[in-house]
Figure 1 (cartoon, rainbow, N blue to C red):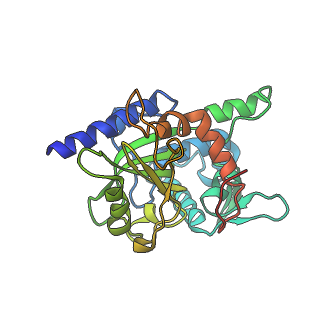
Figure 2 (figure 1 turned 180 degrees about the horizontal axis):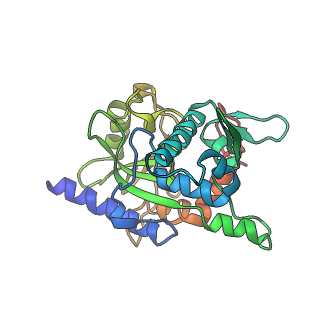
Figure 3 (figure 1 turned 90 degrees about the vertical axis):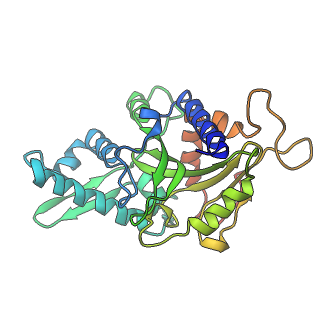
Length: 291
């Protein structure tokens, strides 16, 4: 392994370790065990959430009397249906103001799953968020049970072994991807170029399909850029920096990278859960910052 690769791996390990201290699951050093590259999710986490939060509906989708290959086939059908829901364009329900379809719709609203010869299962949201009223104990418990997971070096192409540095998931569904570069060897522009040139969406790359993750971060020790849609050379990255006394970039940090606010503050579990909840307040197709 080259010196540059060692530096980048150290950066990656430190970032993930600090996220783990802030409420994220980081098992076996983030090895992508359980990751299904074709479905672009961690099936065990997705099924666990549905089975524990909506047991009656889960029984309709995956009857308890199924075992072995039959049970595995029923679970696979359910998971494949979720990917179809995730592939839909998100729209806002004019009555409720909630997102319908796509990742945001699945996270906030849920989905229905119909099968021939069985009653339709109507699953609620794939996530629960901490309520403003802490006395709502059932909601608090559900929010606490959300599995926020870190995976490292995650395959994104069913035909190759290419991987993305970090993927962050909520109940098995990817919500954030990250490419990291250390400023001692490369700049954030190398990560941006990597997304544009080597991370183009395609049929064999479901993780990179527009809408399958909420945001993609290009991160170096000094700078952060982000995009919500990968589209090859047309991908638009925007700065996600704090500013430095009226200038671009970020102020120096006395305890590590200048960009550590990203994982120490923004991606820390409590803040990230609030951001994820508010994300659906933006109408699909529009951009801007919440006032």
